[in-house]
Image (cartoon, rainbow, N blue to C red; front, side, top):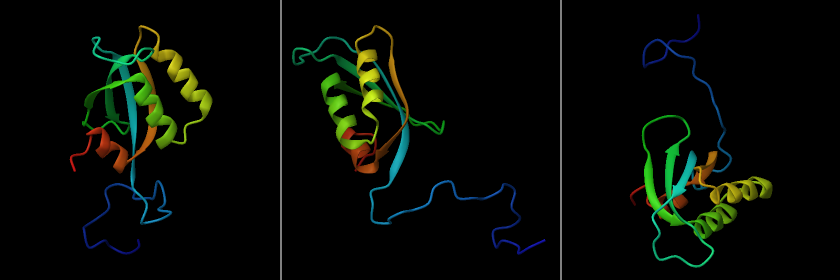
Length: 121
């Protein structure tokens, strides 16, 4: 039957989902990014004021909303993620539509999430 855990019997199988490649790296979190147009505020011409909702992709509670313009969001995604260009181009087109634009399962580092305000430093 195997060894008994000091924490009692296993009720659920335990396994590794992702391995650690470097303990010194900034850990990340997979999130869903949902945008909707915000009320017009002072913004640079050509940018769209947005209300950005950051939601944990795993389904646990933890939604966070912040105001950001489209240029700042796209710059952040280009610089801080490894999303392919075609994904970002499609997302950018959706930002200009009246419907909400969504990017699901985006890996963002703890540092980026803290800078945005998701984690309190």
